[in-house]
Image: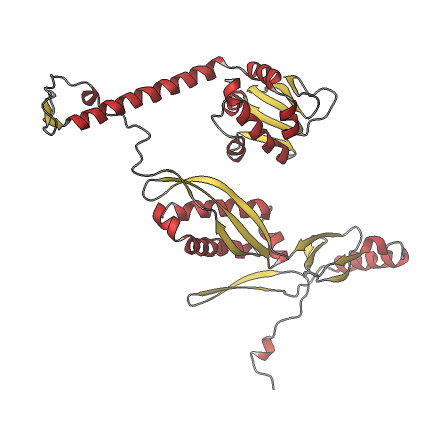
Amino acid sequence: MASGEDSQSPVAPRHGTVLRRVVNGSHKKQVTHWKAKKFHPCYYVIVSLCYLLMLITSPFSWYFCLKAVKEYEVLSIFRLGRLLPPKKSGINVILPCIDNWTICDMRTRAFNVPPQQILTQDKATISIGASIYYRIHDANTSIMATQDLNCSSRTIAQTSVKNILTTKTVQEIESKLPHLNDEIQISLNKETTLWGMEIQRVELTLPRVLRRQDDTSNPILLPDYAYTPKTDINFVSPGYNTTYVTPGHNTINYDSTALEMLNTSSKSHVDSTEAYNAKENVKARLSPHDIITAIDGLCNRIHVANVGAVYQLDLEISRGVTETYYIDLKYGDGSAGVGKPRNCKPDCIISISEEDMVDLFTRQISAKMAYMQGRLRVSGNIGSAMKLESFLSSLAERVV
């Protein structure tokens, strides 16, 4: 006589799916199993009629109803809105009118996490990206769990890289890169496993240190009394301290070297402030029409050969008001002007605000960063939009 456990053997795969999480102590495991479900009699009537229709119209219906699935693919079918068990490689039947199907590629794929600026634990700023290798291990779950698996996986990968690296120092990141790869992989798999997706490998790029903690290239603004003493400073011979007293403050001692460094820092601060104000004045004077006019006079056959694309710029002046410009870097010597491209269709349509356009063409922000931040929207060939970056770099100083 069969035991109680034998009497509860799994039911053969039928229609419907249930994703169950089994918790045993500290171990968590996902189990995807198929459970028999009873359907309304109308379901079986409709399915039978579809099979009958396929037989009546054969062999013409074979072209539409028989689907060949490759060895590395899995076929997922929604029949009257219900998800069926995944179909393996071979010839599978697709019923007309009632089946919606999707083929899932089970091979390993990869995507890149674009370089992002990260503030580390020791207050340094680095730029680092990553390459993520993954595969789908459960086709039906990957369809049911997320609306856009591609976008969701990229977003969570970018977030995980940032969250983990902000808890590390620059020295730890540079010396323990393989360990960080494993740590990020484990963190990602905790989430993506629920989506039917497995992260197989993570490869961080070599970090580029933009600013270290002790970097003094960016001057610090000191109090006013540090720049202009309230009393006279009596310099003495090198090696001795020089003292001045500020009313309301304690006595401050500086030697001649310290005072020289202080004056240099003050001058650097003033220079950087003047440069910033000058750049803001340039931005205030520039208008989109000025930029387009300058580009029209500067573009040449070299730019046309390097870029080879036509751009349409939809500029948001104010709410509900847009202006259209074009940049032709595909034909002749290149041109730019007001309105839509002349005698050709644009390869790429870029939507951007007036202020962001000035920032983009004066190199206050890169095209890639503006796209990632949602300040630049692209319709058409994204690859062509990225080619605009090199063109802007070569013209930035001349436009300004």
